[in-house]
Amino acid sequence: MALLPIGGWVLVAIVLVILLFLFIRHQRLLSLRAHLMREALHNHDFTFRLPTDRLFPGERDLQEALNDMGSEINRLLARSEVESWRRLTRVLTHEIMNSVAPIQSITQAYISSPMVKGTPLEEGMRAIYDTSLGLSTFVDSYRKLTLLQPADIQPLDLRQFVRTIPTLYPDLQWHIGLDAPTSVDTDQGMLRQVLTNIIKNAVEAGARSVDIRMAKASGNGGKQDNASTMQMLVSNDGQPIATEVAREIFIPFFTTKKTGQGIGLAIARQMMMACGGNLWLADTPVAGFHTTFVLEVAV
Image 1 (cartoon, rainbow, N blue to C red):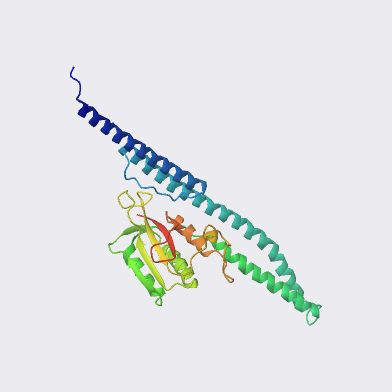
Image 2: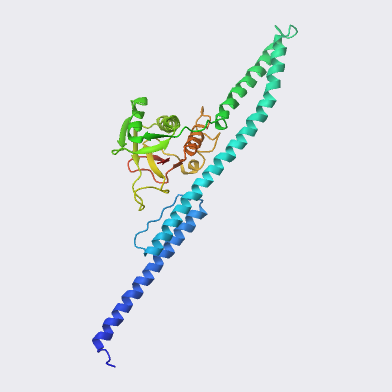
């Protein structure tokens, strides 16, 4: 058996060192991915999507499965959160209305009584009645969260539909990045209401420019998170949403506005879920804008 010359052994050693270096580098890459995913889970961020390049076929399949699992967990958590708020709102509105209704009835009867009419008591009774009536009106607005009608899902040309939105806000500068016709399955009325709520909030935050585009491909054929959904990004240049506020904006009753009721975005997310999609605030806005909402739409 012939032995390799010294030069051959040197070449083998060099190849082994290179392979060992590449193996260690690859393992460090996998460890970094695991660390990033642990951090995302620790921060309850299930929207993560790590790239699948520079991986072996089996590792690529595993990473894609983990990406999809994170997205599905996020979707399920959002649905569970919405349903929890719906139940809580239903209980609160029911109990408050049960307490307010007798107050309205009793004070109205006293106001109409000859013993009270024209006396100092009338002003006090009327103040109580007006306050209870205002509370009833306020609570009634939150019933919208629990009385949402079932979605009427129909095919919709998304490009043609989106191009009708700027007519509602002609003072804004619009950038529409939907060049190719895209058919989606959704409730047109609900989708219009969702976009209206988002853009209305943008205007109130001082926005002068709005951008609507499809999300870039993420390594799975151009479709996002799920083979039956796609993402539309709605961005604006209004005042940014503070980090400490971002996690609260979809909670019913939460608002940073003096006159706001805090149900606009909560209803918007509920409508998107009723249509088989989802709605969330992007961690990183589209370049050139301060805020980006992601609308997941069924196709």
